[in-house]
Image 1 (cartoon, helix red, strand yellow):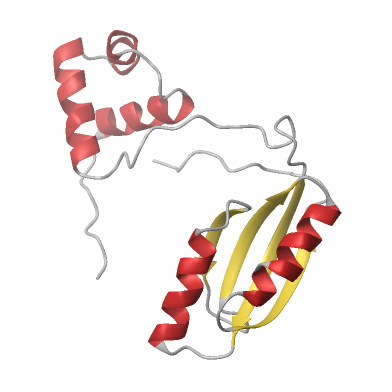
Image 2: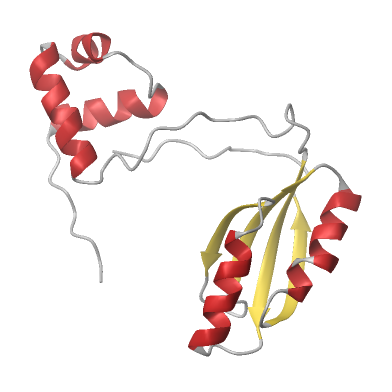
Length: 157
């Protein structure tokens, strides 16, 4: 079931843009940036959190500085779309820290995975000993990131 779209006014949008740039922004500074006093600003932030517009707060980490410079996008096809096979694949996937993100896809492949690894050897270990042994995996195709042209950014609000 699709989630309903939240009604946002110009101030809500300014709050969301500011928090996307700096999620640690104190309420007083945020209020000043968006043209509110702190109390109404805090109420709006709380409403946006409760409505799910702000899903969570997190730090953006640099995988290269953390020893994970190799990025791969891996397309995965399953042998079957039976509920049990899919559930077992999802469970196995959720247990793998190398998988930064996973998407169910339309088209010739069923899933697209964003994988981080220390090097090609570590990626091969993951692919051969974990991914290809996950329940229901029929086929995989890996593509490696040569350079990042536009990193994940802000949601346009």
